[in-house]
Structures are given as structure tokens and as C-alpha cells.
Image (tube, rainbow, N blue to C red; front, side, top):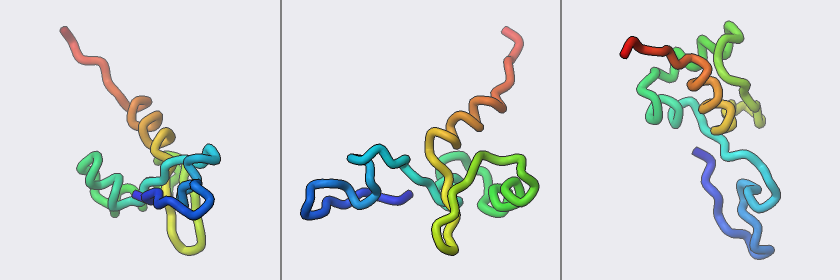
Length: 79
């Protein structure tokens, strides 16, 4: 996960003070969900996973997009 560190101006390096999203890498998503990194990469390739953000050579997912995507795949169970 891209962590915020304080800068001299008092803003976070990740930009959370300016409304930037909390970004998760594929290893972060694997740790959070148990879904392997390779599956996240494959879903990105196929266009079936959550929206991604590419910064340089690195790929991130906005945490809120990841949670929305996971919730959209929630199944109802019989009570």
C-alpha cells in the first residue's frame, strides 16, 4: 500500500490531504483478499478486475474501487 508520510508543508506524500485516493498494489490486494497477484494481473489484462492506475511502471488500484469491485461480486446466500 502506498503509505503517507508527512512533508514539510504538512501534506501527506500520498496526497490524502489533497483528496488523492489510497492506492493498493497487487501484493496489497493479495494480502487483503487472499487472491494471488497473478490473478489480479490476469484480471487486469482481461479487463475484468477493478480499475487500475499506472504510475510509471507500477500499477495500483484505488482502495475504494477495489472494495466496490469486491462488493459487486458478492453473492446472496440462502438463509
